[in-house]
Length: 384
Ligand SMILES: Cc1cc2nc3c(=O)[nH]c(=O)nc-3n(C[C@H](O)[C@H](O)[C@H](O)COP(=O)(O)OP(=O)(O)OC[C@H]3O[C@@H](n4cnc5c(N)ncnc54)[C@H](O)[C@@H]3O)c2cc1C
Image (tube, rainbow, N blue to C red; front, side, top):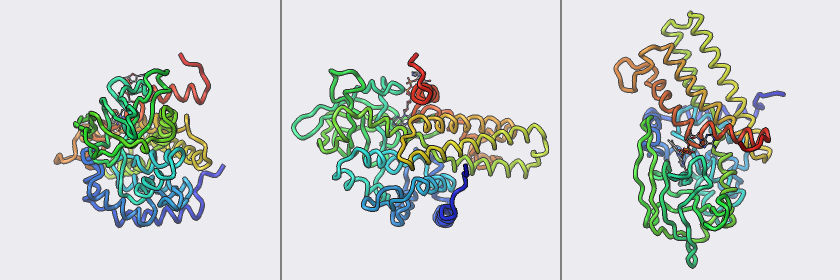
């Protein structure tokens, strides 16, 4: 099997790189490195719009919805280069999660209304799944959506809904039927964050990122905002989750390259123990890339990566932990310094990664839950 990109893909990659080298400014990187405290800030919106104009933000969307009808490989190349150039703080939910799910289950009107604006870099979505008693056990969603006339009335509380302070819409899981088994009574709705009755309260995470508690108090949502069929939302969420767990590895590649340069500059690279440790990280980073390529290959063939995407999620986020641990061992106390400290190396990225890795093991589903999916869906093992 040949894992190389084709000549055309290589030249597309170079074109994207050249564009990002010019467009990604230090101000943008500073904005991005404040993570979800800001989320998508003014510099990021500007870049998204520029990419939208080139149809590079969601190239795999069909042409009539603002894409290029490009392959998943082109989409992957762009996402990978964007993270390599530190041009976005997080997965773009509209492009990566909501868009592909809407293409599969949305009505024509919904596709026209949302896909074009996602692809144009005009709007972003937050994910509204988790609740105080529904995290790993997502089927336990209790937020209610009651149908009244031509609307749903939403009531209840969500937690850890990260993008709600900077996104225009939330992709909300709500219970539409409390009288059936719990997986069967959930629906998926698009909710405009400007609708009266929504209160967003910040929650701060150990890596200084922001996520939110969100309260819904008689929030009126038009019935045409329902995705697919009522009460089938849980199954649509499974599709959306497979998209969410497919991560590019560009940001880790960049930080690893910079770390290796640091070792060379500081004269640490002669130590055989350092060489062993860094070589091990290089092996794992390569493995993470290959797992991500496999997911791209599957989605390009319209096969849902139900258990292959969880492999990327577990491996990459646990790699982040191993990488930051090893780097701190090698750098000593310098590795623990925060951005802004006088003697901080690598702009504090290793220290931040150490804290960031801990939360990345949890957000988008914990490692234990990903392993359950791999065991049950991939290996067909019975429920314990
Ligand atoms: C920073 C951050 C951002 C987030 N952003 C979003 C967001 O934007 N939108 C959103 O909807 N959600 C978001 N989440 C929520 C995230 O998806 C959940 O936190 C996650 O799914 C775990 O759920 P929980 O926190 O309720 O933990 P629990 O489900 O209570 O799990 C607690 C522990 O028990 C383990 N566990 C639970 N069930 C099993 C099992 N069956 N087998 C083995 N072990 C198990 C877990 O692995 C974990 O270690 C975010 C979370 C964080 C921390």
